[in-house]
Length: 589
Image 1 (cartoon, rainbow, N blue to C red):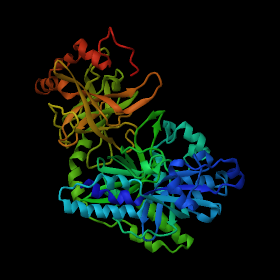
Image 2 (tube, rainbow, N blue to C red; image 1 turned 90 degrees about the vertical axis):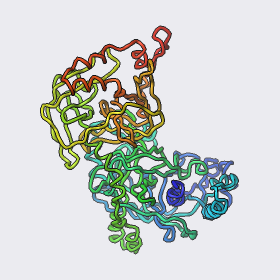
Image 3 (cartoon, rainbow, N blue to C red; image 1 turned 90 degrees about the horizontal axis):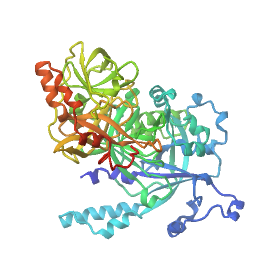
Image 4 (cartoon, rainbow, N blue to C red; image 1 turned 180 degrees about the vertical axis):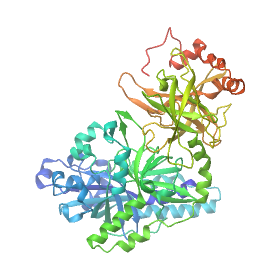
């Protein structure tokens, strides 16, 4: 069922490549050479193929989405076109430009749009008929193997570049430069130049037109307004990693994740943990509602860092805002395509089923709090109306903290003072603290504490990592990849969720049941290189302190928490990431 739902993404996403035709001198010097592996395919489309081997040779590529096959309208990110502007960046007053027309680029700018061939769609329809006849869903492998190679190049025309000021406004508020945000590696900064470094192009998008419209019908793109999405919504990203480098392998790769966070007018800024790679810029972010796949956003940046720590989230812009700005720009330019763009605008369809399914996640979000010790801040989880669990290192030795709670029905935080009832000792491998609020806070459901763990089950981490209180807690998804036990008792949980600085103390939930599994303690860092791995992280199982929590809630006795300071050597060894201290190699983690 999922495969059929994803067909609109698979057949309507594409790779866009832009380049200027090589000079005779460059041809003579052999700068542009054919790839032998692609020769047979390229020779049938020789007029459309550029032979540059890398972007340094003048070829730039990204992903894109075919909005309308009959009209041949294609949307992508604008970054691949800025290097070809006739006027240089210094000549532009970016805030005053409402659009950039195609005639502001060199006449010899060539644009290739590569997508699945129409024959591939025909083969898919044949396979669907065959699948129906066989009755078992068995499709000959030969047919499937041939599909990947069926792709075709089309020549495209650049109509215009258009900014999305709503995205830029929300982005500027959320990603403060002083906090060390970056959306490209050092290598990319050198390759793209100052324009990439200054992030001036991030909110710009390009609309193209295919020279020849696509005739074979296939599931069309349905568009949804991002305002209907909520944190924790399942989403799919469709893009082509590395752009035009190897499309017969990477064309229209699908990844799945959740909507981690949203910001701005009608959720114009979208963040997802669906994993994307460079070259996926311009690809689509999709959501399934009532069995139908909807385009909700366009990938802006597949990778981002904060203070040199990889965050592991993909940044996207809501498609509804992009289309609205395109219609305004086309109206000003006099191009007669506003009617066609209006047909693409999302309808006000009912999404009650989506909201009903996501309601438990919204309840989980409201139990997650921000813990501020005055020196640093981290995350925590409300166990009941006045007890908060967090990590010891979030407190930095403070005896009192400020706990900021965001009620489910409000955008405003309520700050309540809390006193530290217990904090594990520095020598304890269990990095845990218990805080009691000075005021009772009602209206938030108590999380159900889990008593068992299932390796491979879907889980999510909720915390204030990366953004603090700017747009509420973020959600990242993954699986429970390992449960480490000593003496048959769980002492460490490992997940593939993306965990960032500020997530410490946040809860680890089971996605299906909503049960609280553990408290996030750390992600992984290679001390040798300084690299951080957000998708390899460790949590403290709730079963470690359930008895002590029950003892305190029932009898007000905090002495039960001392068991967290009296642990065996085997538990300490697990949290040191060592097998046996006397034989262990020095750990990089």
